Amino acid sequence: MKKTYKDYIILNKNLIIAFLVAITISAIVAQILSEKENYINSSLTVVVDFIVFYSTFSALFILDNRKKYRLDSEKLDTQRLKKDLIKIISSLGVAEIVYTTTRWFLQFHFLNLDYEAYQASTIAHIISTALYMIVVNVSVKITRLYKNGT
Image (cartoon, rainbow, N blue to C red; front, side, top):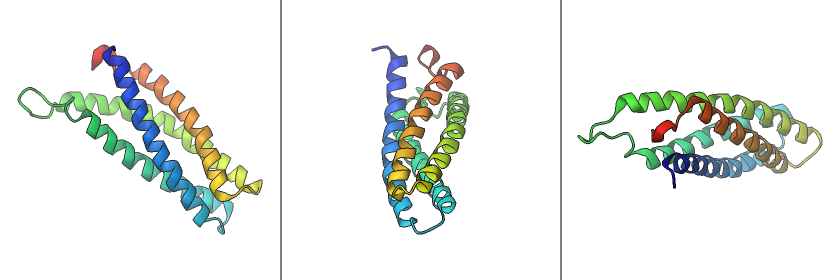
């Protein structure tokens, strides 16, 4: 398999695992906060989701790429790491704006329709995740994160 495709698969695997962890924790938090006002429930659930997602994603990304940024001398290739971090942060950042906005409004909307809090969180999360994945993959392609196997 071409290295570029393998890199995309690893990135998407990490994103999906991070989303599965975040969706579970977010649904629990949403249900715990179900007695709060809908805007408070939506806001706090999105914050928890953000923290859980990025903590999980960061850990997985580091595990999968720890050798990629090592030179033959075992020193850290800071130039390459810095360049790739800028590309991935910009790709994730653009997608995060779409995700956070969509997720907050959808969860708020479903709560106003009297969905159970965990259901509103889960449905909003799934729809927002689909949009996020599209935006991330397009952004990664535009920033050429995996150009020439780098």
